[in-house]
Image 1 (tube, rainbow, N blue to C red):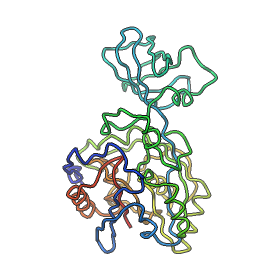
Image 2 (image 1 turned 90 degrees about the vertical axis):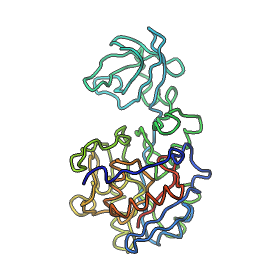
Image 3 (image 1 turned 30 degrees about the horizontal axis):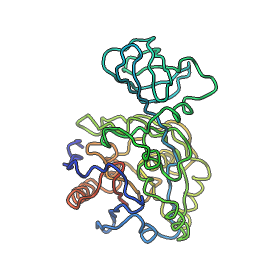
Image 4 (image 1 turned 120 degrees about the vertical axis):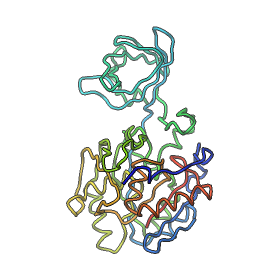
Length: 345
């Protein structure tokens, strides 16, 4: 299929710059695949839309304050980087950009006075850097909690965060630190809504997938079959595989909360049955994919020409999904990370 089939016009005013409050009061578009109907509800109505014994599988990853902003000590020019990982040989692996051409050996000052030394530039333009002087008492993530910013996508205020984003851009069930982007479908849940869902007989289970920077990248090839998805670390524990089996035997549906949960579940079910899993996954779900794990999906409204909208089309059908997206634009739904939600059953 040509990537042009997954394109659509989106007025800039529909790109949400902040979440609704409370977060479960966003709009919810419901796609019924069997009836091929589209209906319009609110997210807090989820208990009335799901069935007793349904299982919601959510991603419990936690977004780290991975964006650091500072100045080059040699020039005073602005320097900005996104933390990717700690390097096995020591230091941090980051994507950095600034004016001029920084050289290995330079230092930059970020956050509340943290100094970082530029050690090595890689062929892809990324860098290995390290705190200066080396601090053996604090991990990179501990230092980022003090000196870092929430790594908002560029379509939200040009990536500039506010203190409120530390709460807004985190799910209420986030536990495992490691993502540089939020699993956005989970942002709509409140503690109260979770309690109401549990009281209605709906179960929850968790997976972990640490969302990487590639989540923002559009598909740049003409044929979607030629796209290669970046790998991300994921984990599905035994208790979650057992919860999926229990839902299946009791007649409940398995609903993935977000595309990251869907990809983790389907990675663990490639043999046809769900099994515990831990490791990298680059599973790319596109039309023609045979689903083994999920019966439905809660998701946000995604960027055009992205692997995320392609995944949604794999589950609900290309024509149906694009019809829904055009209706969402017409009715003024809010798009992307802080936007409204979609339920596909």
